[in-house]
Image (cartoon, rainbow, N blue to C red; front, side, top):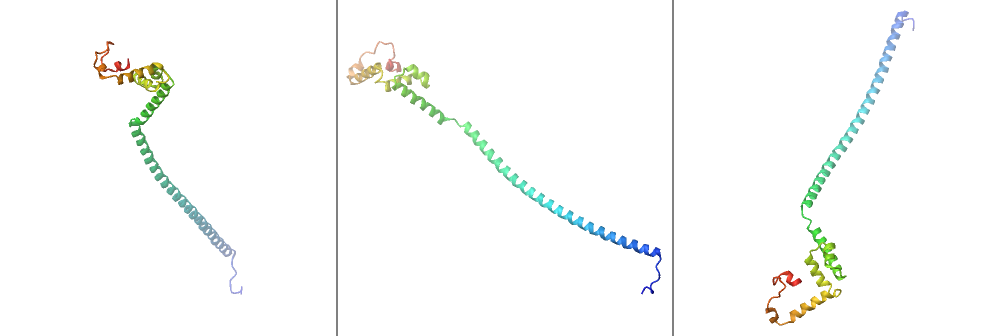
Length: 178
């Protein structure tokens, strides 16, 4: 068998060995290159998926921010319109509290000056509340009410008599109070 082949020279054996080593090196290089390429493709696919998740989340956040912005704007407009609207209910409630307090104070016998100072009502309102609610606790108020009742039951002739000489105009609030 070996007789047919000529005796190879050292140079031919070295060339053949170099060729086998070169082919082996190319094969190892090709194998390493394909593995590197597959790993790169897997990494880039994972990166694309991560970017897609990030973009989806960003779109969702953008929609949420848009909705919240619209809500905040609507709320600020509502606050502005509420601020422009007069606070009638609050003023009416505060006045009602002042009258309630004045009524209780009048029933307890407080003076007119106390009612004006503490309840935020006018002097005439304080006088009226005192006359209406303090008749039992203040004798001068009771006497005034008695005079009023006596004056109503008197005949009309007394009304037609000459005006009083108090210096006040007849029919004014001072003529009723005094």
